[in-house]
Image (cartoon, rainbow over all chains, first blue to last red; front, top):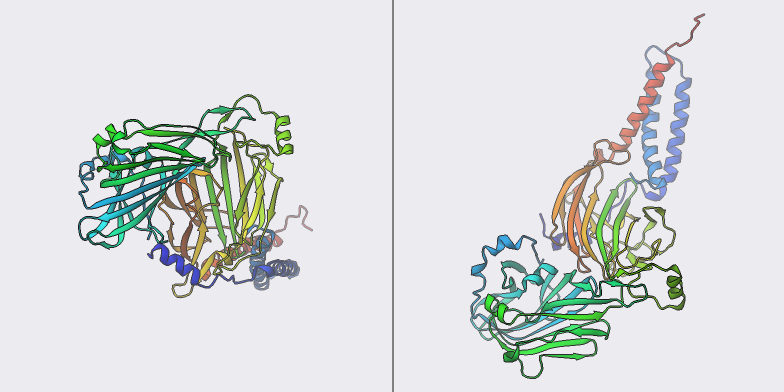
Length: 82
Length: 485
């Protein structure tokens, strides 16, 4: 473990944190992702009922993943920084 | 170098006392000057020792503090006069005669070598209101007591103590007795707002019970103090780091108390309004506080036990990059819901968001993040009795290491759960006590967050969504009709 002065100097000299997604884009990303989630969810509800629901599961998984990122982006854009 | 102080009980250390008082004639103090700047909750004491070495090869100089003085002191720093770097100070413990500190000199002193050392200390809860109760329009007066003689394990040729008050209205000060053998002119003089005790000549090594019993005495100064005496009974700071939102949220829960003279009689709103109108505000009434917050903050909130307090004004300054040296700060003028009179308390919560880029750095060599969180935001002139700083790291943070700028009473790592958490986030809690205006350092924490840990949140929400879809899938295939035709 470094000494306090060493960590202080290191912290000053290192580059700052940069997020995966710039914070200013988050509201727009949230809108796009959640709209797609809604559209895909609607689409999955119109699919025929097969015995092995492959297509439905595929659409549902895509919608879930988009929804997951969309909800995280939504939370951050309204101020609840998760 | 970092100074260290411990709050170990003196009882335990007192068992080791017999070995301390025999420092030997290794040094001689050619002059000691102690300057006491009187304040409300905080008293700053600066002592300059002009030291001459009597024996060769000396590396450690011992400084003594009175027993009561050491108990009240919460910041100790030793420097060579004129230089900025602190020297290493080690506590040797003490007994009824005095408490010893060992200061490591920057370089070895030869025989007859001289050096000027400055010991700066801050005492908390040292001054008390006198009279203890005051009406709304009365002035505020405090009493401060200190030991007359500066103790030292070495011979002192001359020493003096200057007590400086902030206003020239000094009601009384003690005249020392039984000091004729050290005095040439007068034992105490007053000039304006400064009282000088001394000079006292030819004092033998004084860290022993007989000197303390025979000569050491308490001198008390009774002075007017024209600023509020503030005390933060408890400060709870929580700093939450969000990588997805690129945000650092800092929230302070503060229990503020006006520890000036308690209010005598009733609080008259009429009297208070006329004082505000005619600008003849009493010294011990707190109507507002000004705080300097970091630059680039947004979404600040200020509420108390009743709800949001709208009587505040925030003027922000633009965000300053982490590496830039800048004196910019945002100014927040807080006005509590009611004026805080002597003895009254006010509990409030103040919080803000700041961009994470200003506080967190990325170490690509070790693949870790380093964050710097300030211990507290200074309330000028106030002492913080108890402080608890909780730093909440992102979910899935590993290899957590932290460094505090000054020793903490205790530190612990726990799990904190908040929105969209599955396994919870690591939270570091550090506890401090008796913080002064010198304790405004930064706590550094280094931690690692892998990509999979970052993705935990979206995956958790995606799983919840998929659960809903899976339910919908099965629900589509269940026939709940009553009549099947």
